Image 1 (cartoon, rainbow, N blue to C red):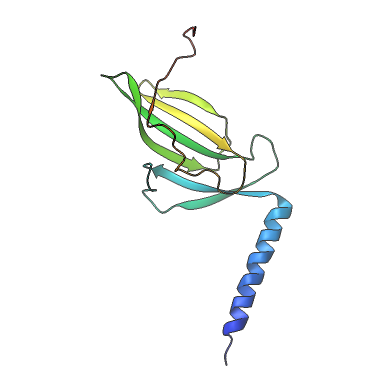
Image 2: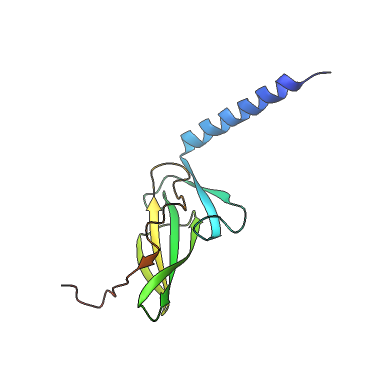
Amino acid sequence: MFTGGRGKAESLFRKLCFKLFSLFLGIRFCNRCDNHDGFKCLKPMKSCWKFNVLIKNRSCRTDHFYFSERYSGRYLYRYSKLSCDPCEEGMFQVFHDLLRETFCCTEDDRCNKPELIIDTTKEYVSPDKDII
């Protein structure tokens, strides 16, 4: 018995139902990777999802980590982390020699693309210092 065409139709129907289901419930899909080196995810890239309802919880999150290079006084890019965690943009000094820069994106599904690393070095200015 030949059922090759029926299997494809069922697969397309399931995909269509899933897309409609996610559209009506407001589900956001994001990329997920615990250690992205700037070119590729060191483990297979995964995806995660979240309900796209609350204002603070509707974004995909990208964390770029920089480490302090003592001789130049600059922070050099180390790795990135992509997730569905709740997001608040900004720069945070995690330890004395580790800086985390967080980006939030709400444009569309899987908008936290790791290729969007704009700089490989950062200058950190402490919020305690006066900026003129």
